Length: 405
Picture 1: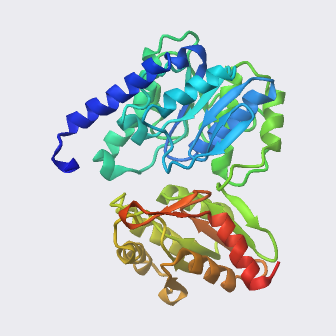
Picture 2: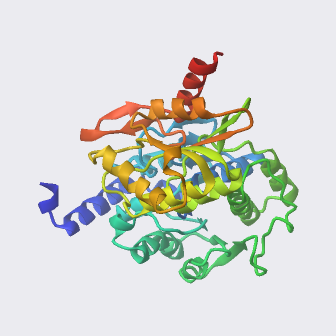
Picture 3: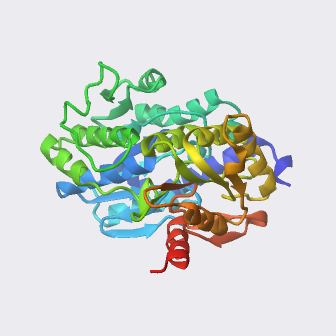
């Protein structure tokens, strides 16, 4: 039935939902300093680091990400399998933040959420752009449309009636000029490689425990928000130096006798950055989302895994109603087109068994990396059925089965 309903009808429906939510809850964003974080990768980490920086000087903060909903000290897991909640929930979240006396709301803003107008009727004070690579291409019918969807956050910021508005942009990303051009207010540019960056690791004496160059970028983005809010650099640097990381993002689950990491990486770009950080010779557990989502990326991910991994275990991720075997076949095609010895790969649809296999293959000193789900609480299979899941929990259970507690 859904496919016979014109697209504009759904657009009107989602727009009206956003308006109704704002009206019911009294346009709560007017009483908060609202910061939106968008981009392809790093959004959740930037939201979490930004929250820690703002809280470090005594601010009461609410934050929303793909991982959690947090209002001051109260946290709950995001169990929705979506980052930006719909059906009035986002406006209710902001209203609850106001009720709890929060000064700030830090929101992860996705292109899918923007497509459904969930960003509407929120008066933003600041926006952060992390990076842009190919994702949700089918859903947006092309990369340019995907980029334009992300850009609507900055257009919304431009229209916002708030005073002292600002934007934070990754100047090292080739799309930074596009996003910068959508907003005419105060801008903070951060980067590592571009000499025009105002905020660099050297300029703020950045030292972090978090692994990977991508986390240097995430830390710089959060630092810029702190600077925009008048927080002293020594305080910002102290927070970032002590930051322990974000659940399911490059999370070390087993340390000895070999290392096991769990990460959410589900795009070729994110996967490559994870592998580059960990080095070659990896044992990986790899899948890709089903439901017709971004089929183009599957061979690319297989090709990247073949470059960095000694052993590859292909497995289910979130197949939805798609044939799980076909998803693995698509990934495998990228492996077969490389120089990788295909006998060093295997296909195990049961994700628990695949994790067990990876742990069984690992020798002291090896590194196992399990990507695609991070700390997601569900695996979604045919007919919308949700299976309770957490890669980190499964890793610990299977490790104890093999090696004992």
